[in-house]
Image 1: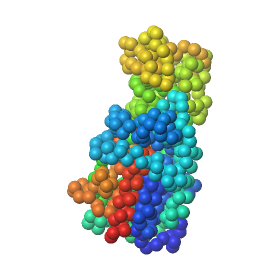
Image 2: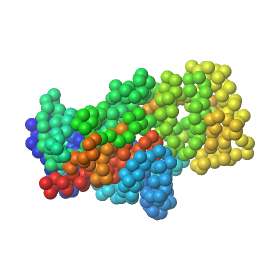
Image 3: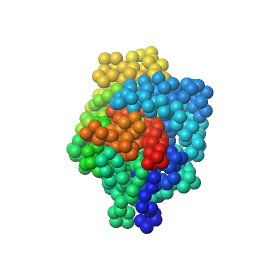
Image 4: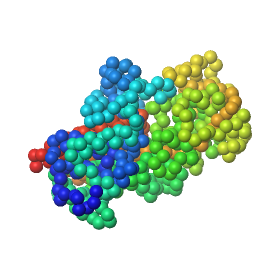
Length: 469
């Protein structure tokens, strides 16, 4: 959209065009007459990290369609969240868990279609719904619905500042075609993501290790809007060093590789660092509850690299990788191919095999009784000998999805300030406020839950404020 096509003012301006922003814009438009959605990316790359999603986690009763039919209660979802390190603000955690019961209806009502539940080692058929066509289809559907509802959309337009007047937001400053312009608003919703694509910001906390990080999501999440709000005295929530990070193939592109570059082989073998030593329990719990801690653990290893080693028994127990693995007829040959100390890797694998408790029944669909004894770190489940050639290996890097430190908000998603005040008509949803809920862990599909629940709250609150202003 060119600069001349902007109005001077809108009832609601939503900053950021991912899932949370789209949900906020749709919710606001049900109440407000004029809504502008500002998306920094070009149209072909719209949607932020939501482009790379595929499912949403939500609480539901038994018999829910597009799951395996079993109940997933709010109590269990909250327990899962707390166990992985979420629930930083318990009141906000309760809101998102309770609100998750309504996300499937909201999504369906706004055009999203669903696919049958997945089975196998993902362990998500009971807890998550998968949308038909994945994240790009989700984003495209919402954008089409937004246009049908009369929402204006500005692509390749960055918001560089939020205009504040006391406890009120008066509008935003946009950068369009190299020129800056102020647009007034009755209410503003910020959904512009975190700062994970800003390597220099990450470097403040992690030093030169960031040069070995892979940013699996959009390059547009550089924290511009977040930084502008912090300069204006906004309060923060979440650990500045905290992020959702997974184990990615070391051959992944630096930015925007998405979910296809993730590796899920870790639970079915051993993971070693550059010295050929194990450093964490590969079988601690189901992968959807643990995959997001592995990026952080790899980030803490020397040179921010690790290696997953499996044998032929395990190769069919996880989603196929985007890039082919290293393959060899012996562990020693595999180690040599990956540039590792052969003796160290062979010794680690032999020690692991010897520590496996005999008699266990391997079952990737449950927390089985295949475990080690007397080994540090232990492997709690799915411990089977790495003994049957061919042997396979992957080099792993930490893949950053989004950062946790963001804007502190109240239960209506209004932005809090360091002086204790709350801005009456400035709201935030999605990754930019996820630190209110997430501390260091993550549940598969829960980022979409946060964005949808709080996006609807923020958009509804913004629409109501603008309508009654």
